Image (cartoon, rainbow, N blue to C red; front, side, top):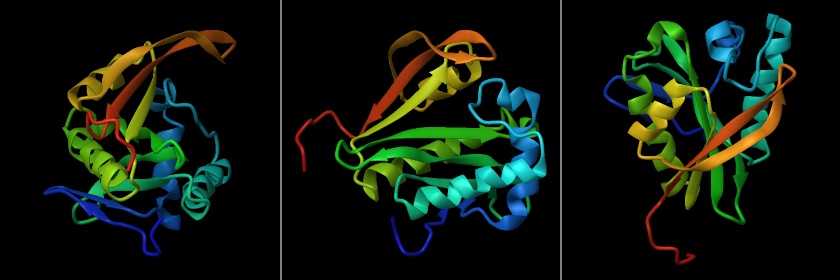
Length: 183
């Protein structure tokens, strides 16, 4: 990673490093039933949410990924989070992830933020492949992946257990380009 945390911007969004005061918004998101229904992490208390804040910091420190707080351009409104994790330098790939507070769903925020994350992964981290692993029943996320030109590669049927039941996961991927030459 870089010594200074990279700030990314669009005409209306600021993607910045998480700060301690974000914990309330992270808790609000990762305890919300509509978000955690398909998100692999949830917290019941502010205290427990500190684990997620530590996760964000550890990713960068250990160079295994990077996550941003997604905010309004003036940094007054916290929308959600997005980033890259499970960074594999040897194979030049990472997994993309994101969540938005429900008040901001359907406003095109992810359509602006996700290309920034992908561009950063391809251009700054030297990735060739960015994967998205989506619960098969998460139709909203699947629609977002398709809009962002991620290709559905297949379904891993009943590959994980969640709430005592087997779930299936769809694998999406975006490649830097169609040339498979290794740089």
